[in-house]
Length: 319
Image (cartoon, one colour):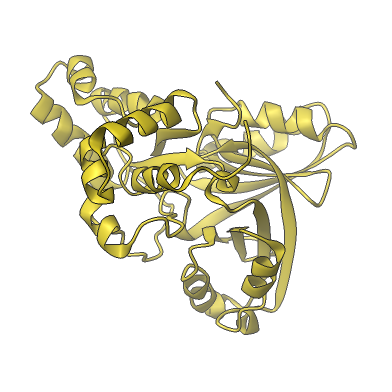
């Protein structure tokens, strides 16, 4: 797949799907003030060739940041194996080669087996570290890189309040909700008619069931796309150390920038993990030296994100 930026209309369609991944092409066209046929044709093409994928991101278990140090030459094989796991959300090879950073969604009682047995058993893994997520200031499900105006975003749906939230989850889902969750994880734009048939209910009931999962926080719908296609080819992972009393101040200041895709407070030597995407290195430099937050941090360490093997639960390059 080419990493050249998409044309402006395609980027705006992606931006609309980032706000409401299940929005009809008619609604998207109305909001963007474009012909319905043009938006439908362009949007369908983006989905068909998997330039963008709309998926459901489950939020049913605790999340953890896993860092794996690999034997030289084994990074790609290990990253591929980790990305193939159903419990991984993202898997990145970073500039501190040979290192992999991954987000894993798994219950606490399964974490020991993962860190002590399963991951070390992979050929090429030399060290595994796990830090649990304590608070999210932003995940990729909430990221919107200013492709739409504020009015356009509001017209597509309720705007997130941007408040930090805990990854601690205690959802009790019945078999019907599990089936619905699985269907939307596979395809976040699964038509209501198909959901109704799956659940054996009316379209109205199917719509209500989907809305209930989202409103409860058990599911988020997300448009997954490579940042480079949106004109943001320089992706960097930033680790910050700071006194715990400064974390809220720093996190809120960071997510004031639409260039911050992800910002999590984690339990570890580094208190914040931040995923930043910028159009160029100069913009990255300005972001890393922004006095709105940089003065409150004790230590900042940035490393290039060299290759993404999985984003938002989707294998990169799959299809």
